[in-house]
Length: 173
Image (cartoon, rainbow, N blue to C red; front, side):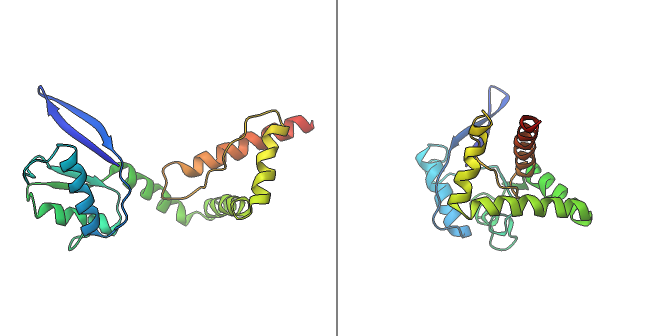
């Protein structure tokens, strides 16, 4: 995903400019795909990379690597560019790592993962699970995977489980 932040009339603006599928996920491949996209979008023209002043990414080594990461590759074209590790990714990592030392939270997360895997690993079980909300007169929901790298995915999984379990229990009396 590519967002750009730019100044216009002295005001800061942020805009989503596109999403590209990348097949070469090494630093050179990501850099090439990004430059191709920025050039085709008219953001970079005539090999002038000075408009590229900042890069915000997740903490993957391919992005933030200090020797061969995408940020290093981009700085070769504009050494004034600043690279930052996205604050939302950092917050998510801090929260997930902070809970690692709390036994019952680790167990809780593991139970959510086991529940997800139980249904995700079998189309028959998943189809039966999808029937449950219909039987309970609700809408069919997709079961979210609770992972520590997707923002709020554990919360989504817990809310879905809680909502459907409460509906089921209230109907049973």
